[in-house]
Length: 556
Image (cartoon, rainbow, N blue to C red; front, side, top):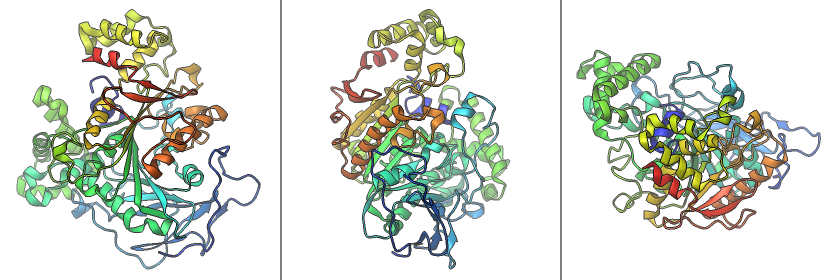
């Protein structure tokens, strides 16, 4: 599923749901800076690259990056072997060691995915201008930004898991994903990960392929575990602390964060977690995923003893077969078919069955603090349609009727009572962007007895006559100090930068201590189910107690 479909089904998008290196380390620009694009205050040289510059040691050999704006940058670093051929559907394997210094100067391949019609000439292309490079099954790579190399200093490590549901995206899909500014300002190591997606990463062939294919439904998540293990084993050479790793993701990446935080293999590899605009409290029913595996074999015209032929065909051909099989499954299974698709599977071994974080599932899983954040208008209906700005209450009710039937009017009225200052178009955006999913996830996480913090991002950019509102993906660049870099989301300048400084400071404090407090935001209380404490993030930040509780109740 794509980003919009993913959020609607899993998170919140609708109510339904040692060694080498440069001898000297770079000075860090203090936080609270002017967030300049170049990170410098003068006209000195900003890029350094050469035979003795930005050389780092890994378990598999040395890599060469570059030093830009006081931050060492390494891109496309392999943490796993090519996943094509005999490695398709198999758990990730370690990369082959190399002897020469390997260049790590550009982003690695994106995982196989549907690349058609990603760049239409429209408002969304202008705003998001997605970054995609080569696509192949040799995609297990990560990017690293760090202020220093092998200096003995143990910096917190942030690991970014990209969005796009479980079927699309990459570690640098948007400019807002860039790690340089936060690394420099916070004196941290920032990593981002590419991993297998869609049918390549989540085809459960265990029922038709037996023991050999027992992990095939979860290899995309096992890739993430492999990346975290690589970070644990190598990050000290990049100035990082393997004992203080925070995972953060948005949309599908938020759900990946929730799943990793429930995986036994992640214990000891992750120490804090942040889920933005996407969450999950259970994985796919294996009875469904295995049935889809049977449909795939049938769609390919293969017998069970021919299943290995699925490893031999081009990935483009396999994606077409698998997607046809999934569509056929949904069509033939009726209501139950809505659960079909390609996403992590509750196999009871890699990912627990039942609800995440429950007492039964928490014994062998990470016991870690967690932050959740969503935006006010994840799926604002009219960023590109000015005519909807003057929609009436009655027209909103009619727009909602196909989904909510006779309850549509009561839902609109409930939101109007909670938000009396909002116009009908804004109420519509709030309804389609309900926090129901993230509230469920936060409540589930409380079962572990670990601190939980919840935020709600409401800042609206002054673009497209204000119609963009606090849309899905907008808050990412604020957390990462990239509001000037991602100017097509924010407009750039001082106003978004001020909020970004507050939010990134809270994130950095959470990374270091498990508590976002102590910076320039108001006191941020721990979340409780009784009060529903939530930090509102806007030009004026404030804490409220579950301000949309009555409205969410109307959606049930």
